[in-house]
Image (cartoon, rainbow, N blue to C red; front, side, top):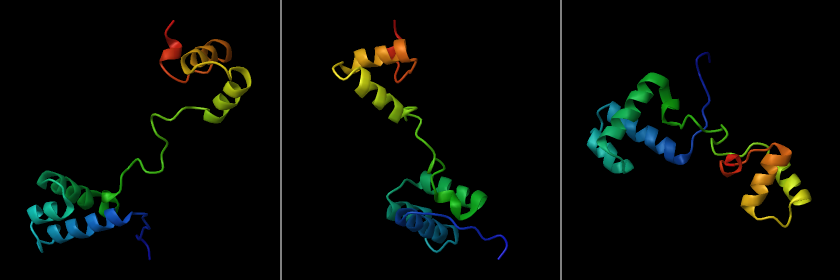
Length: 113
């Protein structure tokens, strides 16, 4: 069993893997695969090359399971402080006060002064 990996994939990714594998085996053309998947020929070629390099995991998005780049740090803490100290403030003023008094930067507006 050495060398076997378990990958988590959605139904869409499994379909993409199946169709691109058929194209790689020359059962269907890349153009047909692109039409089935509603992608461009170039996208099918890129997916096929990723599958050759990474195996079946090549169809899975690499950012799955990672936090978003747009996620707010300390979201729960910010909400707790906001509700306790600044319940009647608007969003811009609350953001500024959180930055000034509590040293919590939650957006770019709060650093403009």
